[in-house]
Amino acid sequence: MAAILTVRDLRKRYPKVVAVDGVSFEVEEGICFSLLGPNGAGKSTTVEMLEGILPPSAGEIRFRGRPLDATYRERIGIQFQNTALQDFLTVRENLRFFRALYRHGADIDELIEVCRLREFLDRDTRKLSGGQRQRLLLAIALVNDPELLFLDEPTTGLDPQARRNFWELVRSIKARGKTIVLTTHYMEEAYLLSDDIAIMDHGRIIARGSPQQLLSEHFDDSVLELPVSAVAGKSLALPLLQRGEWVEIITADVGAAVRSLLAADVPLDRLRIRPRTLEDLFLQLTGSELRT
Amino acid sequence: MISLRRLAAMVQARTLEFVRDVSALGWNLLLPVFMVAGMGFIFSGPGRPLFTVGVVGAGSLSAADHAFLGTPQVRFYAEDDVASGLPKVQRHRIDMLLDVSAQPVRYWINAQSSKGRLLEKLLKADDPTAQAQTVSGPQIRYVDWLAPGILGMNMMFSSLFGVGYVIVRYRKSGYLKRLNATPLRAAEFIIAQLLSRLVLIVGITVAVFVVCDLFLDFRMEGSYGDLLLVTVLGAMSMIAMGLIVSARFTSEELAGGLLNVLSWPMMIISGVFFSIEGAPEVVVWLAQLFPLTHILEAARAIMLDGAGLTDLARPLLVLGGMTIGFLLLGSILFRWTPE
Image (cartoon, rainbow over all chains, first blue to last red; front, side, top):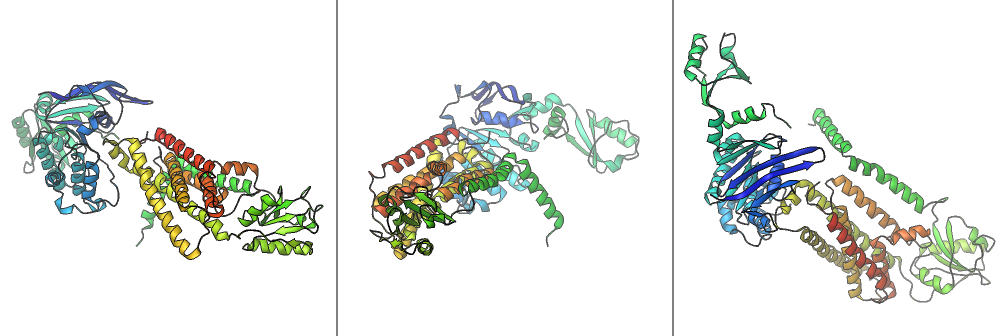
């Protein structure tokens, strides 16, 4: 499939820091491409350059093979993580306002149905719940029927149910042929929604591929999880990794590990066995400490 | 029940935020200094004179010319002749006109002016022979002189704070960033702000004028159309001034401080409540830098003197020039997001 977005040797330098240090990738049309990274990794700066909001210091960005020009903003949609809206306007008035800023766009009634806004259409936007507000912001991002949609941490702050509802919404939008560029701190979200993932750190891309590719390339083992109390005082030959109230045993041979636990008389009634996840990969690649 | 622990934590957090916002803190410290210095300069000397008297025919403006000229708390200034001083008495720009070259001395006061009446008593105490002269032409009430000042002041606050402050809040909240992601251009946004506020201000000003006119029957010698033109042009110039202040900042405290720095001097030296007739030359010069001075000059000329557009060419050109200049500067400085 053809690339809708092509990025070559993109750089952004500030007086005291290099935020993006030579990033290159392509985004194929119709997929969900996710950019992941810890705070300060350079992903927000990269995305803002892709959105055309921030000028790069060097490198180039091409949309459908052409440099970004004045028409680019007519063809993309952006859902920012933190967006204030005009006070005292209803959901319907906001949609109409943003629709009026574009020459071409989506049918407002259809958008209302797709983003499930009908029940609070005439409500002041200041009185929306978190999930309702995110659905409105998504609708505003879709108001010009964009070819490329940027979602910047769209589910941050939502409860699990609202987050899952939002994922369904994103899937339905992708099914309509839209290309999505997603940034998120939720690895589960990235795993479930993404076709292609780039993990950034220190301004560079340090891993790239589909979620399955990334996991299979980096891991051939599984994780056994036990409560700390289950292994306390036991003499085990296995390496243990403590994570809060649980310990993890990372092993390529689950059978052998379980036999060792049994031999050490470790109670297995709360044993959990799971495959490696994107979160494991993220922590392995970027370090387990959160950076701010 | 108020938790002192939470209250203290909140006070600490807010104080830290304020103290660490160097620019806002700077303005909050500097503004009162500027205000005190400015007021001190304008009203410098051994106390602000209570009255202003134009004197014709005095050599030294001292008691040697006439005993009344030694009266404290009265500012005496030399007026060229009676003809140039009389309109100032009529329009409350001065409280009395005194001709000491005549024998006995002659004086003119506005029959509507309580300050004029008081001065008359003081003069008569020094010189019982002084002769009151009739001010030819209509006596202008203080309210006729004051009304344009009050309406102009209201326009000023609405223009500066209604545009300047709001745009800074938009930028701080990320709303401008959202708009920047659309095809909306900066010039479109700026002009939209100007037009939206202009319609509001002109509508309110006209409504207030009409309602007050019903009760006070303002003196109107000129054309209502000309007055509307001055109102529109004046509002545009002050909105454009507010746009400059809001062009880049994200701190509401800093923007508020800057807007105060602009609005308070205008309140004092642009002639809202009292004329700056006889004030130091530099104050008169400074007043010319503010749009409100030209708005009030033009509005009073229309309402009190019946001035037409040709008479108003200077203030209208100045207001037009200020509007264009401020808009250009505001557009050049404007940023959607903090840098």
